[in-house]
Length: 463
Image 1 (cartoon, helix red, strand yellow):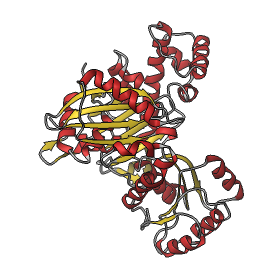
Image 2 (spheres, rainbow, N blue to C red):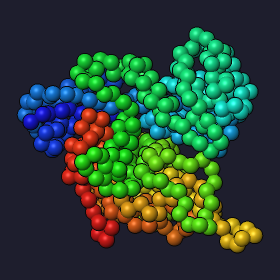
Image 3 (cartoon, rainbow, N blue to C red):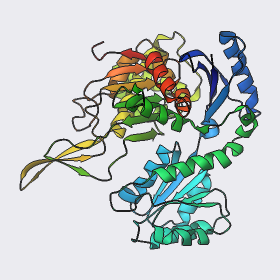
């Protein structure tokens, strides 16, 4: 037996998973409150004691970790045109596991700088212009940032003609130059920037979050938790040498403050009478809905769906829905615990969180007419052919109605132009292992994939 310890330092809970790599099995899982405000080792030690109650004393051969503690990796991006370089910057940031807290287009203003100071990002991504194209915007924005006190690293990934000049303008700042995220019109090149963002996370952000106190235990890997989940879902979809994946999928993680959606699919048009509009999106895509969450962002669910819809799904009067939603926003740690009203409301809220987040993540279709006749314009990914949905998050895994909630990710006649999956099997991450398997996949991809296929609870579409 070769035991390996995998740790996810979450904003609220530190989750531990012990695995036997040689036996390809989960030995045990445990969690404890993340004590990032004092000493993160306190929560980690408690989690290890709880884990040992299941597994007995273990001598771990290796230990890897990911983290979203203290708010995760907060990014601000600026680009030239919102639909092009700005969108490329956003895709690069989200794919690196960051939480994008600000997106700016065109030239930064003094008011923008005030917003950036207030947002207090961990990293600033400065892009703009294709290679050989516009340099005025990115140089202006570098100059505007230079008027601030250096507070955060800046990654320059715009027009290569201006990149080094931006670095000189930002003298005194911690600056990293990467290849342009959009070197040619409509062409994405985001992987080098994503790699640089993760490296900054390792060298600087971990220390700032107080996680350096726990690194003595680690063998090597430390990355943002969303990066680990992205790795896990991509491995699950694509497979690896010696083990097949399950095919194209979407994954939905409904949390208390945000809802993350991952898609592993090409998503490009297949019909001859469909044209694609905008940037082609990466096979591995992640989005974060910062206004959609079960507690801290519960009002966002109600605003997106409408109180009438929440009332309809929960079976509760609209007034009672409003009262309970206000209560949950003030008591973010409150769980239903057998309260029938809260159980009904939580199921309705989780269903609508899934529906809203996946609808925003998926592409859309627009019907138009040209001289050649009827034509469809697709924006974003076409996920209608995806046949697998993976779900996780407390509100989905701690209920018997997980599959019913997950099916809100599917196509609905009420939104006929939304390109969500038509039908799909549901895989439930009941034991919170996705992030752990993403960590493990960096060293042992076959074992990680086989454990996911074995441990994730599968439900057929017809169930």
